[in-house]
Image (cartoon, rainbow, N blue to C red):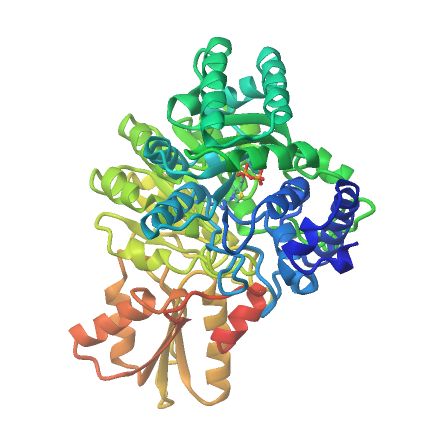
Amino acid sequence: MLETINSPNDVKKLSYDEKKELAEEIRKYILEIVSENGGHLASNLGVVELTIALHSVFDVPKDKIVWDVGHQTYVHKILTGRRKDLKTLRQLNGIAGFPKTKESETDCFNTGHSSTSISAALGMARARDLKGEDNSVIAVIGDGALTGGMALEALNDAGFSKCKMTVILNDNEMSISPNIGGLNMFLSKLRTKKLYTKSNVSMKKIIWKIPIVGKPFVKIVQRVKRSLKQLIIPKMFFEDIGFTYLGPVDGHNQVELENILKLSKQVDTPVLIHVLTKKGKGYKIAEQNPDKFHATGPFNIEDGKPKKQKSKDYSKTFGEKLVSLAEKNNKIVAITASMKDGTGLAEFQSKFPNRFFDIGIAEQHAITLAAGMASQGLIPVVPIYSSFYQRAYDQVIHDVAIQNLPVVMCVDRAGIVGQDGETHQGLLDMAFFRIVPNLNILAPKDFKELEDMLEFAINLSKPVALRYPRGGEDKDIKFEKHEKIELGRAEILKEFDNNEDREKITIIAIGKMVAKAVKLASQYEKNGKNVQVINARFIKPFDNNTVIKSLKISKKVVTLEDGTIINGLGTIIKEIIAENNINIDIKTYAYPDQFIKHGTVDELESEYFPV
Ligand SMILES: Cc1ncc(C[n+]2csc(CCOP(=O)(O)OP(=O)(O)O)c2C)c(N)n1
């Protein structure tokens, strides 16, 4: 069956029995590929019937489907002519793990970060109306993504707009971990409200039995439905803010799904369809461990065990050190924006449940919440991935930095993250944080330095951004030296050999690139140069004195950093050279001013760094 599907038109021709078979084959195919390449498994297994239904009822690219986060688009890619290409999923020059307009005209909007779909879809719907066109616009958003502020801002606007559009709420009760929050409590009432579900089903039966005889009829039915629902559920949030609420519907029942989608097409105002799905559907091990199989590396299908054992990484090192510091200091609290496991906070949560806060996919709220706590004497530690810190930029400036509050902002996954690609690369944080007054910005060269820096940051009583990369330490370089961390002090890892005439070269690096600096130094030494290696440690305050001393006696300076070439370490050194009239050659290694595609960390680093 799968071999015959090359476009959505092929899906439209199938009977319901054939679609059932297709769904099974798609699950098998996705399982095979993700178990080889890694990727987002459980969310994709959960949306198989929903995606088949969408492509049965709507016509892409004329109709627009905006996938929130976009991690659940493997089925969509299979059905829109990329079945064979999916084998190259997330590989260098292969197809992306998220929607890409460049990849297919059926991907109408790029996503990767959560909670953007309703805004984008409303934008498309308004554009359609202004242009006098008549296509459908659909946002598909998970219950996790609905906890993000942007989604709520967009619901507020969309409901009031009266604009024709459909929001599909894909409710599997999970974010990456079990979903949290008041909205989740509200949704669970909708999921389980027996009375409501019953009446809804009979209402649907009435609607579907009567042939659709035009829009006026639908309007009357809507009005009747709304008043009935108001009687049954006193606070029908979605309806109250301007949406027609349809559902809940079983997200694995092909017939019901397609009927409700067809019905939604008849409504001229915003519609929200509440679809209940099971994360990991069809693969028992993922159904039982949906959080573990949200995103996974390669694994054995038979037992779900990873093909490669995960070694210790920076996030785990951070988590363990935080627990040991929190044991001695009860002012320390930890906040996560729905990324407890990814950021290494699981142990903290189990040891200090009262001091741990999972606040939903809400990075902006996380930072202002932390600022509020810090204003009352607590020491909030907030690990968020670098690319998601982009969301909280104004909160870092307005709520933390201006008030000089002691929030420890841990910038996890800083630098290249690899196969999630351009939306997830953490290449901008040094550049955008550097210009924020009052902020202290640090990056460790290895695990031990991360532990020391975390302790330093917690005791500093000032705003700190502490950045560290995805993965583990450098495989080749083991650092023996770990000088005490002092504010704004660099560490000289290797001094010049004195009394020598060999050409002097200063190599300055920060974070994980310090290991590369050491390797580069030995290459230069083999070529007869006299090299000094400086571990900058701080981007801000920067250790001008140590660096100027070294630059003044060098012929050349080389900088290495895992961030954009603009406004990072290289820029700092150029500023120092210009301001102090130093006559020196400079070579900067950093990422170019571009969005960096997907590929493994090693593949991408070797493309941009010499060692
Ligand atoms: C701004 C932002 N923060 C965090 C993430 C990481 N993230 C990716 S998917 C996800 C959970 C999404 O849950 P939901 O929307 O319910 O989709 P599901 O996977 O359950 O289908 C999270 C937290 C992200 N992509 N964007």
